[in-house]
Length: 470
Image (cartoon, rainbow, N blue to C red; front, top):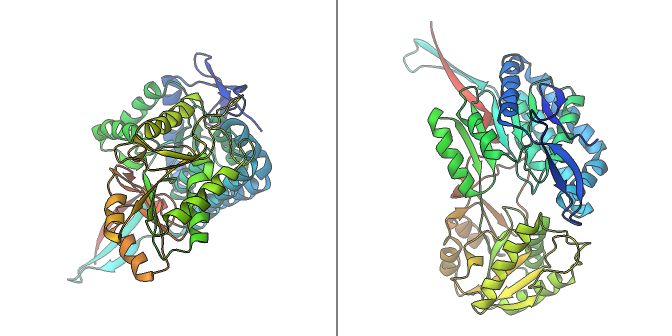
């Protein structure tokens, strides 16, 4: 199942200069495989293949496109164990969590298989009765999709599913750390009947040299990027040259609010899900825990006990690489230096692999970097608040606005706080908000555009108006 070449125009090939990149197992530090490392010329070849396939693919009936996605859903579901094992090896997810990502990722194919046939238009009569107003929705055109390493399958299916449903061809640039899953997915889609040239995959370590020409090339009509806010800003600058259609899903700094009337059992369960999904390496991970002072002691004790009970190497996988572990360690060290108290964890584990233990901190000062940066690791800083207004103000005190979590049994409060929070998504009494049927995306420095839900296909469609005189 494991392919290591570039996938361009329906064929596997080596990099133009023969270069390869080693794919490392973060649990051991050992090399799993060497994947082709695309050159700028390879990237342009992939765009050429996508451009040449676009007209015929756009003309393919929506039902046919949907049936290809449905077939891909079935194949991915059948091969859950193989894809899960591959993700565990190249990304470090514990097996149970990897299986969960396969199931979640496959659902995007099923969802967009159903959405493909619903992207219709409208017919209406002008107020003066002299003209009929017809709108049709047409594919944007070749799309450049840049996916992250933390969900190497699901972030691909979420973008690819929408593009296929809309009738767009694609060039996919997967993360350098995790190209194998995307290459295996490309082969699965080929098997499901996706025509040559519709999907092209170009792993590369020369990201800037490969991506910038694609962004500036007028044949590219859409860019969807999931990654850091600084890179998103750079891509937006480059995309301005040709007014490229953009979807940017960027960083997060999610607040997790626990009010005095919260069900603490549900709050602790939600905290574990919101913090420890993918070892905290998720843009939706809870970054700041804000707990009402009346329940803070009980919540903190119960949460810290649950975190301390997790087994590193079994329940908790490694971080993606040495740099990620060093960053998390530096953030914790900074907080402790400023006076934070460590309830569990707090320092890297020894031995092979890039592990960092589940860590809970209290008394983290406002100036600590933990409160400003996206942690991207299994570290939970807890602070208290006195009233609702303070909780909302502190939750919103960040440039980011991807997701927020609210735990309360007061329905009026749930509505008030959800409306007041500056976030694109809010989880009320639940620690996971991602769902194929829901629009995923943020506000402020967390980007714009939505993936998933009925809105997801809109990012890949243009609306054309036709006026018919009668």
